Amino acid sequence: MLAAAVHRFKPPTANLESSMEARSKSAALPTVVLALFVVWSLTLDVEAARYQTTNFDVVAPTGELAQEIGNAAEHWRKTLAVQWIGKEMPPWSRKCPIKAEVAPHLGAGGVTTFVFDRGEVFDWNMTITGSRERVLDSVLPHEITHTIFACHFRQPLPRWADEGACTTVEHPSEIAKQERLLIQFLQTGKGIPFGQMFAMKEYPRDVLPLYAQGHSLTRYLIGKHGQPEFLKFVADGMTDENWPRAVREHYGHQSLLALQNEWLEWVKQGRPVLPGEHRGSDVQLAGHEAPVSLPPRKEITPLASTNHESAYSRNVRQQGSKAMRADTNSANTVWR
Image (cartoon, rainbow, N blue to C red; front, side, top):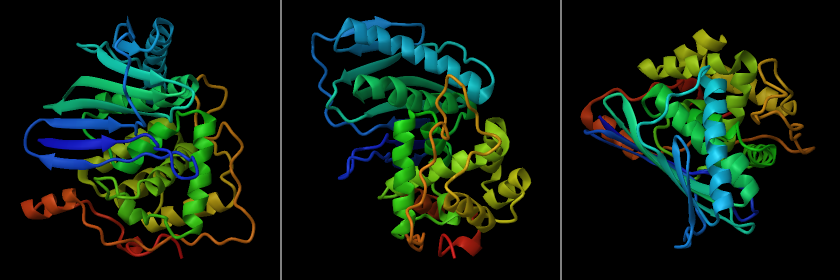
């Protein structure tokens, strides 16, 4: 079965905040998945240097940068795999090419592509851009987390869960941007109803709320019961796409609306640290930085959901398949 997905790491916005964007397509052959970080400009010098590791073939502006990026990529691949799935991944059959453009003035971004075919994942390819610091501590871990999930689940994840989880491993400065954006979106009517968000197979036109809200909910669920339970929850939900059932069985909420309301209360309280959040790890997780508090005297009133029909949902309808179930109680508004 073929389904193409696109993931983008936070493009700079008008206020210099970051966000991620993506799109999905479905067909009937092998599955091609593209994880995309938005790139300002990617014109590698023909004189760029190359450095190879066990799993990566890096091309960067200088030999020193190529080596630093290659070693960092191996570090994140090992460390994040152990953290998320409890073990290191075996070497890939072919190295993942990484093309890097690094300069202080560049916005953080990149593109990763890979293919799903009959339970196998292969044909990796990655392009990254940004300052040296953000490439090493945010772009690389985010993109490599996508590859870890691809190897673990062998299928595309729900957009909110995939991008939300990948954002938790970014540098605290990048996470803080997402937390500020979340408050902005919730106060200006751009929140996404959970019934709609859980059913998303494609990225919406405005991806910024999805990234901010997906990250926040992922942090909340991990904070409640830890990362292993979060991955079990995602895997279970994908078996039948009955997310209300999965939420009830793994987190004890009777509906997506109940989870939505409890999460919102946590946000209103300033997102205090929860028991399942890790501290003191080599891996940066959401919550390593003081939470961003709500500004005074402003209500959180997200926008009612839209009736946008994605290409995926049209394809499902045309094939007569069952679309992903969602909590009808939260179909029209995010909070009340």
